[in-house]
Image (cartoon, rainbow over the protein chains, first blue to last red):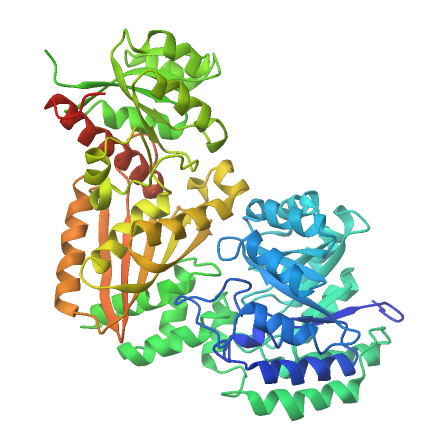
Length: 340
Length: 299
């Protein structure tokens, strides 16, 4: 299907999802220089917060080097045209965090729940809409349920006031046909004014293909991350997706060479390790496990002398969902005991 | 003459009915009234079958005769929105109120931590915090009673089926109230609470992870002993309260992994998060009742 002339809003994740591979240690200076460069490259939306969203600061997910407030103010202060977004997971962050982020000057709030639990987002989506923010419902681990079940949850978020709904492939498990089925059904059943988005992880190298499938099926908002900096094998690499959209004739407003340079000159040098499809990241995608479990599993594996791949497979068997990082060390302790 | 103290349960839903089934086994509490608002409520019908007096006219239907019926303790298993009015009516009749809603008019009560203090102070309304609070704050306290805790964090993971519409509509109330009680009752200088809802089938049994950061190097031996003693204390009223892993020490971090299986009275076994609320509420009532029976507490 041709997407010639279609308008796509690109949303960069490297200062939020990218916090995962950075163990939430991106500095304020790095936030500012990358934020400024993304803005200059024409990226319209930049997400900033702890990797697990507002209020993610914790033992369970990691203590960042600065507060959400400091990060948001830093990036809002340097962008000229881009808008800044924040992520909020009810159960971790609260409406108090949302108010703080609004006061920092965000333009978009994305309220994320596990794909079956949309009804915990009512108060947060409602408040975001009431504040006049671009308010997006973000349904995570969307591979775990059928398109029909996903639609029920999407309708709930739409009814609370979300003007956009995301199909989120948190595990990097989906193949293009899975994306097509979900986005196409949402497109045909949600209000025409409700925007649709797709957030991919590159664990099966499907980030680009899935994002193209999403646009073809009716999505107009796509998440990517410069140099792919994100959890697991990273997000859809934004500069690559820009090149693909250029070839396909879609309109997005981002300068390809500038975004390539942001990736190469700023983001890659900042990486603590190559964000790539190693065997653990591939296991996440293959077994359908939440991408930010990656480093936790690797650390627990090292500490207890077991295989990180085995830990991730077990996390999949236990049907864990996003946020259950605490179970990784628990699983590792069980495995180490069984091993004797 | 029976030493048992007569009690009324307000709210004939799942929680109220589970509480009723537990209270019927109690040595100290005799449930005599079930209060609802729907004449056709199956919960009221069940209570009637078990021999309780019932009303579908709310607390107003109870207060008229509660003194004559000797009701001295009421449990509120309704919602935060109506609790204040329920509590005022009941305490005006001289009865004690045990609040299972998130209203938190009265002080937080985590039985193995501070129930004795409340009994000593003759509190007329005590609040049972949240399910996550009941399941985790004993562990925070088990560390803080050994040495200063700079930061306490709890992660409660519950099955999707065990989280009702009230909690879902106001999930911030859970995180705020639990975090506050981690500080005020658990003894952590700073508290944080996280709740994760998992839809897996079959439903997972409630899991809780408790992390503490101590100010000084942790006394591993004393903390380990304190944790095990506290587990045994909670097991007295929640037998399915199980230490799965830990305490693990990592620098100043101490982590404990718990599982809470319910008794399966009326609520399913996996819903340990709901069971621990009803069990803790009953435990609270029993302690007040013991004091009343011994003549030490006169309402």
